[in-house]
Length: 276
Ligand SMILES: [Zn+2]
Image (cartoon, rainbow, N blue to C red; front, side, top):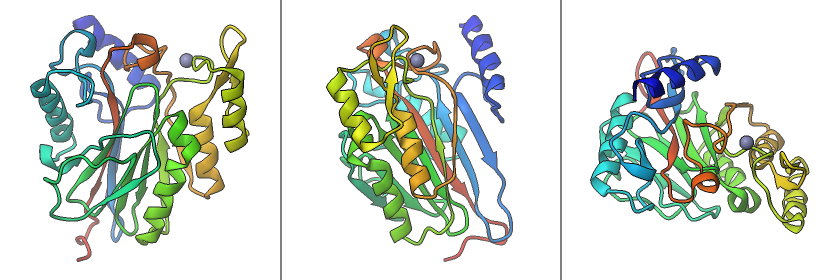
């Protein structure tokens, strides 16, 4: 797989990755802690550097796609440890394409994967993750009060409002200074849908109607997510890349039986220590 490694290093530099650890992360950024301000590690994984075989090769993080559970556990462990977390401290969801949000409380690291599409944690003890293969992964942090979140926004989740629901939960918990990163997903030119479905998405977010490479109706789900964050006054950055066009990401539409990559985020304690 040496050639694969070379390929993703080149592409990672193109999107400005920092701290790149070979083929595990498609994009990764670390913002250092300051006095009274949490640091953050956030990243989007790719499909390289794991142990899964065949359709799932090789860094499949999805537990619900019929891959070998031991391989998924090892892959999740590699990602967690790359972020400096014990494997049990990186929390995943059992995603439903809905808009429910779960708050992880300290001491709940062994409580399984909640049936939600948004997950929120306070402080530095746990990281959170959203799994995707075409859908849009969204990461949120408030570095002043110490909150993190991950959301899984496919077309149904974007339309149901999982990202606004996650922002609301963070604000209910005291967030005052949110920022977001929107990860790579299937692009508007690759996500063909029936005309009526495009119209329905357009009624939710006017920026979502798109056109495929061949001129047929399509939806740009990530644009809808960025639109929703902007409406909520959450500044966001958008990592470029299309899951279907990239050889470094999993695409359900492109491959059918395939794995899942993830958006992952954790906080680092502020200089001077974390408030109790
Ligand atoms: Zn595309």
